[in-house]
Image (tube, rainbow, N blue to C red; front, top):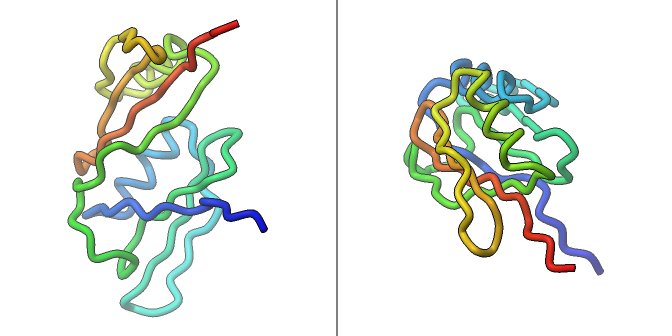
Length: 122
């Protein structure tokens, strides 16, 4: 039996601002539903990813901005950095951490993301 991580909740204060942010860096807006006044569910997926994030209202008790360690893997950390900066995101210049090249950024609430280019060990 496979156990797949397919959805991770990211706590935000302003759902529309967060949705605009994530779509501006290339995430696809899959769903945006408000099944009740207390719940709004927005699902966003990074290009090529099998795992999505959800933001919204009534989805998690975690404090907005409290997420650390979210990580995406890309073919080129430099291209990812350039794409983030072009979208107006404050990202760190690419760093060689020994186990890959990384750039880091935060969403408008301060949730922290790492973007890794895997090392070539061949």
